Image 1 (tube, rainbow, N blue to C red):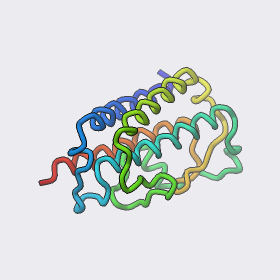
Image 2: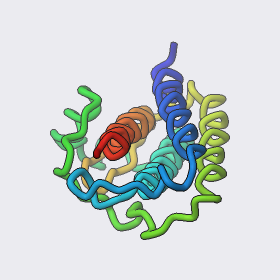
Image 3: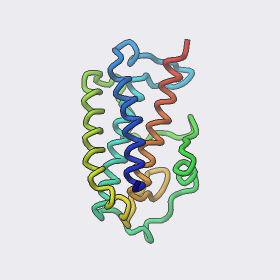
Image 4: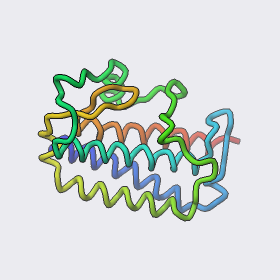
Length: 174
């Protein structure tokens, strides 16, 4: 199985968990546990959607040759490589770029539709798995350095699972 397809399948699995959470009602979506995160469950999901949109968009751009030349763009930073290899993001160590910080009160009615939109984008990218696997250029992550198309797909899944673990802890908090 091509790497891109594997990463998209992994992300799609995490996306299904997000869709399930989004359908569990307002009380669960508005739940907070400040000792775990300043963001509510809905804000976590809103952040997942915004970050995933960027990841999928950059993967698509790179697969169309619209990124930077890998030789001149620099390397993936060490922490970026660690995250991609281990599939783990240390909790509380990074700050979300402003462009993906969730709204204070995300529109709960739109959340499910936005998640469904991501599923459509995944389907469109799945049709391009060979181009994603063979793309030779990169796009820079604002904190982690240069990512290939497959790196962007891998990061989308890793990042989503990171926030799903936070959601699980918020919902499990007394």
